[in-house]
Length: 265
Image (cartoon, rainbow, N blue to C red; front, side, top):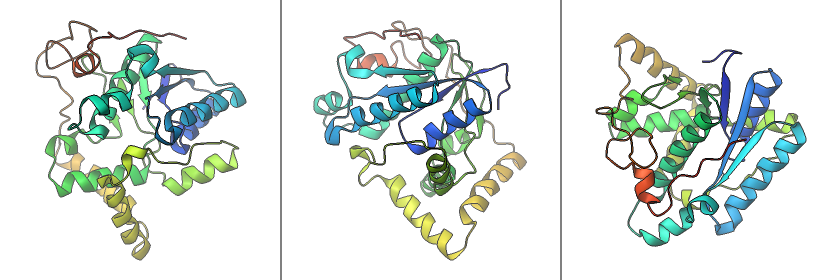
């Protein structure tokens, strides 16, 4: 996934998985930088509470953390986008914003690998949903490692085979405080329903999730599924210079009045 010569950006939300991953990699003496995005979700004070846990974590363990406030920099947070565009999918837009900013901020701060805290429960439920609806491109994208390509950093998931319960215990045992509330926009999300289904299967047959995910990776390797992480053509957004399938990328179109503002640490 990476070596000690790499500088690893860890996407941190303020939750147990991402903070545990950053703590673990730092403890193992890898060169790391935590990156947190305050998304401007103010229902239940969600974004500010998440940021509070991130700040406390960085100070307690003396680990470098970069915090990017979406509303401060782009004059518009996720709540504002929701109010402006009533019909769009909130989770899809939020995911796009996080992917764009994590990649961009990591690049601008000298990182060459981006790590996320996705665990076994996350990855198994994602695979279950993608197979259920035969999302072929998403199935091909699902991997422990996505290579660097066309301005996109190498992306890795070191916690893929650890359960949610295991990362929770790791955080508790190491004195890591984390936000326990779910994002208010995730209520009723399909991924949560998929997790519930898989948890029932796991209860009846322990090890089901691990066999399901490992079996997929083994099968994927045997039939040589190639990654579709390729942009059609070599376009770059004319506003921010990041990879895009169109002249102006979806991030800049969403925040078109306020171009990307670089922040370094």
